[in-house]
Image (cartoon, rainbow, N blue to C red):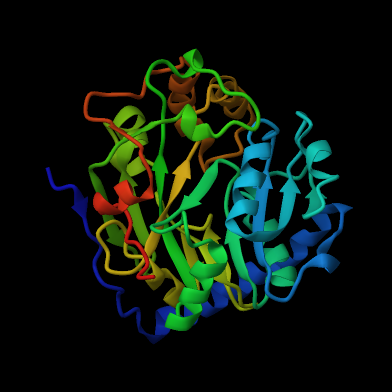
Length: 347
C-alpha cells in the first residue's frame, strides 16, 4: 500500500476565482468583527504583550483536565501570551484560567457551530491582537512538535522562518491513542498525555489540492481506519497551518485547515512534502472522551450536519480499542521525521 499519496502543486486559480476569494476573505473578516459582541472579557492582560511575543489563540470548552499540561507545554516552548475564549465551560476551566498571569480570557455562551466552529471569535482576536506577531492557533488537545524541538523553541523556529521569508508553518494532525479500551486507561490533570496515548498509525495518508483556494485536504490514519473505513471521504481533515505571522488581511476559512489569501495554503504540502513542517500531536483520546462523546452528540455543535455523525459518537461512547497490530509506539519527533510524516527544519 502506498504510504503517502502526495498532493498536486498549487493550482492556477485564475483571476475570476482570485476575485471571489478576495471578497470571501473580506466577508469573513467582517463577520468576525461583528462577532466581538458575543464575547465577554473576563480578564484583559493584553497590555503586557511584548512586541516580539509569540501568541497562542485558543477556543475551548470543558478542558480543565488538559489545561495544566497544555499551558506548561507551550510556555516551555516559548509562547509569551495566551488569548483564550471559553465557550460555556462548566468544569472550572474559566476559573482555572482567570488568575493565570499570561492569559487574557474571554467567555461566550453563543453557539460554537454558528460561529464557524469558533473561527469568527478567533479571527476577531487575531485581527485585534495578532497583527505582526507569530500566532499559534491550536485546540487544547493539540501539541505542536517538529524536528529539533529539544534544542530549538518557537522563538528559534520563527526566526528561522523569518530569515527564509516564510510567513507560516504547516503541520499534520496525528491521532494518538492508548492500547486497550479508551475507558480502561487513567489520566490525571497535569500529566503528560503522551504517557497515556503512546500509539499511532504511520500509514496510509493521502492528500489532494482543492479548488479554488488551493488548500490541502489530507486524510487517513486512525480515525479513518476505526470510524470511517466504509466512507473514507468523510474522515477528518488532518492538515493544518497553525503557526502564522499574522497580517490583518488574513483569515482562516475552515478551522486552521485552510486560509485566505490562497497563497497561505501553499505553506504546507503534507507528508513527504519538501517544505519544513511539523506534527500536531492530537490527544483527543484520553479516557474522558467516552463521556464527552455522549454530551457532544446531544449538543450538536461540531459538524455541519451533526446527525450524520451520530454513529461516530455512539462508537466512541462504547469505549473502543483503537490499537491494532500495525500500530507504532511514539518515541519522539525524530521518529516522525524518519517516517516522512513531517520534515525537520534545516537548523
